[in-house]
Image (cartoon, rainbow, N blue to C red; front, top):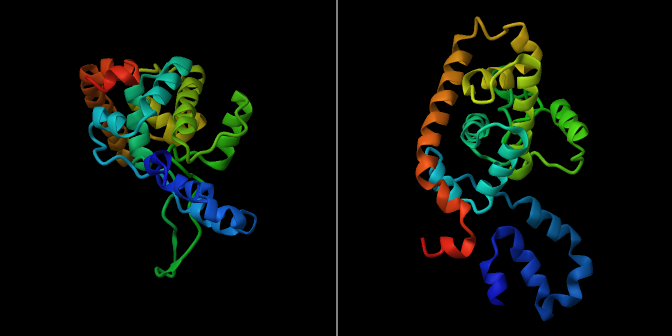
Length: 226
């Protein structure tokens, strides 16, 4: 196998095999196998989710994607990453657990939330329409982090929440901007506790990123020797 193929992750294995001569004749009959192979490949969550420097070191490209969203929408990287941590634990295909029928049988899911940002179907479509990103996918980090930035921008516009206020941004993210305006969170102590957790984590992330961000802003060649 070529050095190129040896460097690739799970989702590239089948592609590399198909490039080898002995597989050339079966390409046309392998669509189903290819589909199964690709749908089974998902980016694993980072191993050290409580350390943003470790996250960005492990997940090549995530810092660049988060920085791009931050520049575009104005929310600090650490606020968005803390929100994503809370929503999905950085699991690409996360979904809410199913409800139970008669306490045993699996029932429907309580919401259509899906992916890194746990965006619902309707809210994701609104994002795609508003940004012109019709091909964006909820299970892709770059699209999900851009969605969170966009949503926080909407919360600032509609609810006058500062983009540095992780606590209230998360409340609006969870309850929706309409629910936040109605103060639907007021009697939900558990939710306010979660929002406090998000806010605290964003502060920890910021302190960590202050110590390592310069490294991620260097070119890849210079990072090799840092």
